[in-house]
Length: 247
Length: 162
Image 1 (cartoon, helix red, strand yellow):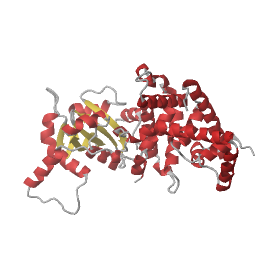
Image 2: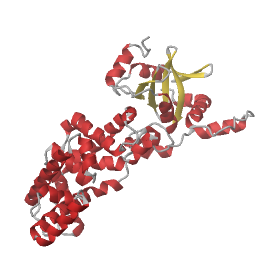
Image 3: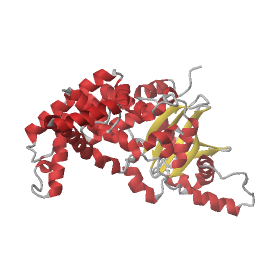
Image 4: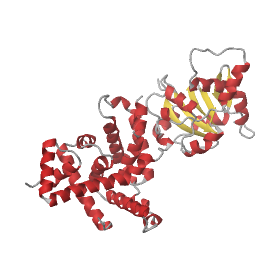
């Protein structure tokens, strides 16, 4: 009995039914050429598997992780938020652990004073300002959010992903110095629902890995994004409309 | 959560991508593109079907669409990598690994895909045929031809002592 090379290959790959398998095993005993062909298929399979096996043990670069599974980097302002909360007599609602976006939002509010000091370009206007109970972008940050598309022409402010939010408006993430945040278009301004700092510890590994957004910001994106981030053409189009949603 | 399940497949995605693109950065770019596509259209995955097959199909399509044109095949074999430490055992294993990876890179794209799925990842024929959207018979004959081509390439480049 002779077997096609395909059948011997399928045998070596463990793809045959028991009856066929038994027949081949008999044939291998009777005919050394068949045994040799099977051995060749097996050896090749093993060699190839071995040549690529090491990749499975390599750490996966952070840029490949989906946003929700991204490694956790500390939000510097968390401590400030905690300290502030302790100092204030107002007890925080105890129903559940606060999620990162809430911490981030609280932190953004509390940190305005601190961050404003840090994100003032030399001689320029502060980049963010409190407006009632909202934080809005102004100055260099606002103009970068208005103008920057496709990750080009980044100055002190680098705009990251842009996307349409579930509530219909546009949002854009940004990195400015050691701070990162999310800005959402609302009422003709860039409102900043979250802004956090990548911790000093995070700046090495985390930045090198290509994602610079702290988890608070990633979570805020996650919570708002509808569909996929805009590509360069989508950003151009949104900019052409002044980041206002077409009604 | 689907994103977590996909994240758990990342090592296999990277390995498959490296079998296809043959350049580490291209491979990771490919995985990133596939990841974005998968998350962007996660509603297209049918629960109860194999997530790995679905993801590999996305990688395959992404490779064909976007990355193939800029595969920098030649760069992997930097001269210092090819002739280092001849003689000691690990160097020999290293050489063999390079020889195999190089041989796979010389295969046609069709052949590289079947080799990547069946021999590198170890998918059963049926799942591999599913990923490639081809009948089983086509898969087996393609795999047999790819193996033949590989044996030939390896015989040419590395005289084996076995």
